[in-house]
Image (cartoon, rainbow, N blue to C red):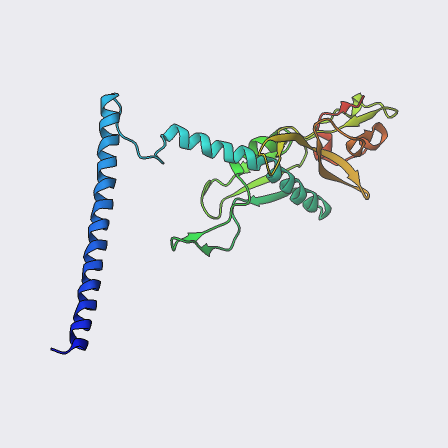
Amino acid sequence: MSFFSRHKLSEYESNNYQQQLNEFKYKITKFEGRLDKLENDLEYESQGKSFQPANGITAEEAANRVEKAVQKALPNELKKAFGEINLAVKNEQQSVRLYQYESGASIGAIGKLQRKRIYHINALSKELKKYGYETKLDSNDSDGPYSFLEVSWEGKETSDISKIDPAKKYILPLEGTDREITDSVTGKTITHEVAYACPHGGKWDIVYDRKICSDAVVVSGREIINVPKWVKSIEPIEAD
């Protein structure tokens, strides 16, 4: 056998040894993982608890997380809904449909059709009723991909205009729109904002401002006397 042949064999043996070593390390890692799980199981059993994985949550916790997500989204959804209502009023409509999801669908990472949510219509329905609107959920499909909330404003008047003094100033905060503003670095709450109804360029709009309101959201009493119905439904608060 030549020196070259012996050198090739030695290299082969070295690679084979390295492969066996890697397989052995892999088996040790798997064994350590199983041992950790057994130790966790034993710890839970000794405390009279059943083992739960690190990411396991109860049904109550899951429901609470969903509710928090809904409440966090509600202020922006309410603002968007008022935008659609204003557009419908401009077109002389007396109702509008707010769809829960966008009409188009996309393929998600797991290969399933996914639709982007626009509104949480059940929560939105309750909020809009506070402003004097009639709301009706889709009776055929209340939580499906084509479900919608029908909002109407025909015939109902809920107004505090008789209490308004034209010489005074007021703010018109929308109930349920309080939201926290957090510092992007520390994650701490630095202020709160609330949505207010305000006149802009000859029409009424929704603007966000600090909870301790600035002059930007203060409205004179004479401006509130002749306003759209959705503005009339907001209880005016006298500005200091």
